[in-house]
Image (cartoon, rainbow, N blue to C red; front, side):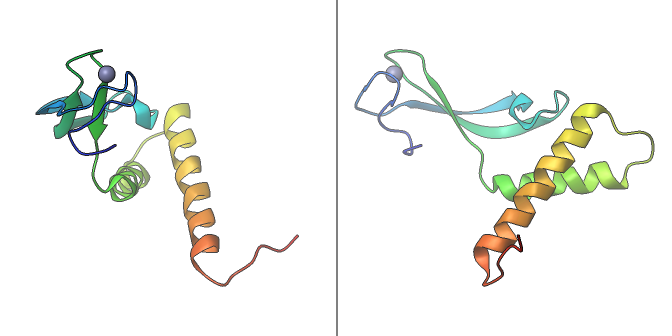
Length: 103
Ligand SMILES: [Zn+2]
C-alpha cells in the first residue's frame, strides 16, 4: 500500500483518510485476534479500506508463540495457523540462505 495516497481500487489520486482503528484480525484465520491502533486508510471516492500492519511476520511469530505455550487443545483454525507459519518459516529459511531443498 502506498502510504496515505492513491487508491488502487478506483484509481483515486490524492490523500486517503487515515486513522487508527481497532481491527478484528480475521485475515489471520483466527477470529479472536484483535489489533489495537492499526493504521487504516480509507478512499474518499470508493470507500476502499487499506490496513497497514507493520511487522506482520513478527506479529504472526508472536501469535504462534502464544498458541504453542498455551495449555489445552488447539482448535482446527489454530493448527492451520501454526502450519502456515511453519511452512512460511521453512520457505523463508530456504530462500534467504544458500541452502537448497533436496528432492
Ligand atoms: Zn477508491
